[in-house]
Amino acid sequence: MIRLDLKSKLTLSYVLVAALLAASLLFMSKYFLEKQFMVYISHKQDMKNEEILEAVTRAFSDDGTLRDSSLMAFLTDLGNSLQEQGVALMVYGREGEMVYCTSSGGESDCAHLAGHGAIPGNDPCPDFSEAYTQKRYEIKRDGSPLGYMILGYHGAFYYNEGDRVFLKEFNRAFLVMTIIFFAAAAGVGLFMAGRIATPIKKVTERTKRIAEGEYSERVDMATGTAEIDDLSAGVDHLADSLQTQFMLKKRMAHAYSHEFRTPLAALQSNIEAMIDGLWSPTAERLQSLLAEIFRLSRMVSEVEDLVQVQVKSDADGAQKRPADISEMTELVLQSFESGLRQKGINLSYERSRCEAAIDSDKFSQVIFNLVSNAVKYTDRGGNIKVRTFEGDGKAVFSIEDDGIGISGSDLPHIFEYLYRADESRARGTGGNGIGLSVVKAVVDAHGGTIEVDSAPGRGSVFIVALPAA
Image (cartoon, rainbow, N blue to C red; front, side, top):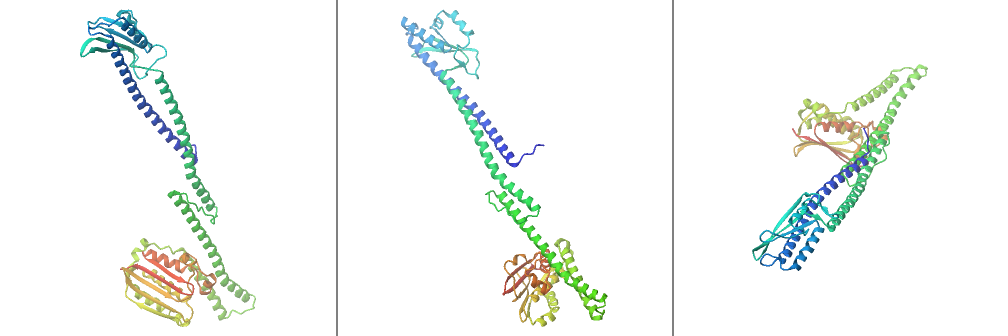
């Protein structure tokens, strides 16, 4: 199978369409033009025949005989002129007697004209029969018959020199126009194919580089063609997403290598010291080692949470039951009383009953993670405000703090897996970049929305809205 690039196929399609249009135009033009031209020639021949009839009529006297010998000479000149045009002239009197024939040799001699072809130099119209035909015209004056005239010729009519020149020039002009039409179609085809194929080729090359791991370059072009512009924008968006995921993977590898290295280093140094006899395995040291093991176990569980966090509403539909979010929030807040007292944070809770169809276990994790973040990133002596209420058919949970806030550059990414706005601060507070991604997944699975408004030094506001039960 022959493979052609898009530019060649588009150019070929333009040329083929041009060929079809040119052939159709040529056929229709020649057909109608020649038909009209033949009508014109026929009309011109009829007018000429009428002129011949008038000339012959003038040669007759009222009694049906020729006026004088000079008029016979006129008919002879007329007949010779017509014979040069391939037309035979025969004139008959009132009683049917022959008055004149082109051959001037009598009726019997005129009969030979029926077997002759066209005289050299005159071309018969190809669309008419070349058989010998005759037309009879009555000679009258003031309504009285004087005789009749017969014009005989081969075919319906003959082209004269002017007719042949016209048709020849027309065919030549049409051929030139056809060539120009083809050249213009090929030029337009090449231009339009280039306009379409070049950006697609650029996008194709860009996707190949993306497949090779090069994410930084962008297509970034506007062609004016909606589909191609959407395609290039989609490829750029894909590159952005892949680059973000790649950076998140690197960040995850770096973060977890650091997180795992610290407890492992503590375990290794303590165990080596005990083996070397430098330290005795006291209960306190063993308890410290056990704490590091718990820490490692917790981090492994967090990684498992990351793998299993893909929640689907259809799969979980059977576990959703109407529940009061305000009561659930009350229970979660009770678990933070100790931490709030230690940091001296003032927490207020405006409770109003609001019900939604939820998976209680998963949605309690949403509330827990949001409250946990607010406590972590609110300074000592700060304030946290929690509200639950219903409005516009929505069950709403909101939490507001006056903590350190989130920068504008980090805000669009906070729901991405493993994204941490400030890694050093996150490590200090135990953050791992999983909590908010879990929150977003659970809220989406419940058909809800989550909004956030935050700025550095101003604190943060998170608002979760679910369809009310």
